[in-house]
Image 1: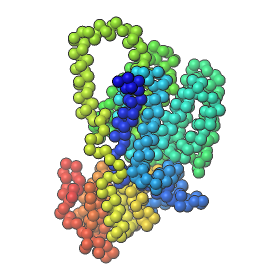
Image 2: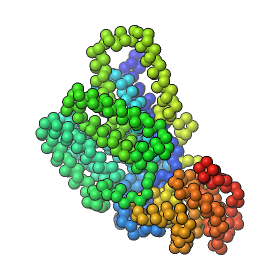
Image 3: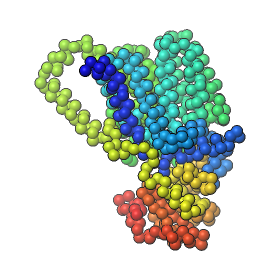
Image 4: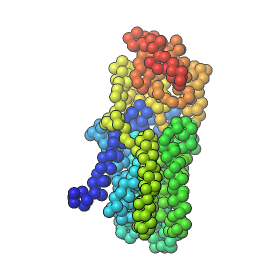
Length: 534
């Protein structure tokens, strides 16, 4: 028993680590993920060495807008992913991604517990971890964002050590500058380094710590110079501020929370609203009681990510990450306040009616948490590697030589790039920044909405196959599939739980049609959502 009392904080962290892992160890949906394209990027870059691959700045994988200017801002993530894939396959990628995400969360929790001396009160850390759990596990896909998640936590804790004079300025530069070079070549969120550093600069400016202010201004200047060490130099510095100017396609991760609530009615949206209300009240009380001292760096960064999460839901994990030190500071302060009012709380807990109220509230909270599903890992979906039957489509296409030009939908682009390039190129893939707004809106989308546009496009590109992720939830995708299934010029030859393949009814494809044609009567239109269901 004494062992457990002595090591209860460490045991809690170990248990939390494995519990969080259950959220991240989910099968990879390669059909809609960017991962396939990242792996191909790495493969092409390494194969071209020592020459510079065209992957860096051309629309390399598409046969449509090949000359559209493009900056491959996450090129180095592709290299790292390909190296890991060669060693450990998709299982290795998933394990490494999970380790990166969990390291960021555990480092931030441990760092915050050390800062606010909460190791002996591990239950405060547990409450904090519990509250941010739905936020930090919001985005589970393997993507370069995981690197940004970890580096944001590391940047913050290194700057905390410097802020508290636990780390010399020289060591600060030796740590942050190499990390900045890694970050700028890995993911577009490298700009968060300036947000985090700037929050410490502002806090020191408000409190009049002028030596620290001067040093941090030099740090930010050097970070900017370090950011120029990339294949695109100054162009990549401007890219994060310009990327959304020509986005011609709406993607789910970039939508505001109110849009997500109206469209999907998700529990996480309600939870974000409740958290925003709680944070607003707690922040007002904190600022009222501490004046300018409430402007702590973690609070400043957290508030920025709170607002950006309402603007784009992809920022929710970063909001959760920086909410950790803020919540723990508030809970620690509240604990100290309760200790000062010890007699009041003892008298309150001795009343039968107060015990009944707290018990009822606790029971209702437990029921709501179970119903929402936000705090529980999937009971039957914990597994490593790809979704079942993911490779069947690629095997069918390669074995039976289904040829292009291919018309594919946006979701499936990364999968086709990974499996078919260089033999076949795609019509479009899931990079809105790699295609003009006119192409995405007036060509890709309109081709699925207008028969006239589709016929003109068919004449221009002479499509031989349509390969579609048939669970596409855009308003135009399902009507397009229904029309093509009715179209005598196209024949379905393959279908599974995720995808559908049709080939053009011409002499070139007659062998495929005779061997694999599926009877069109097997596709039933689900009137509830107007989808073709085999």
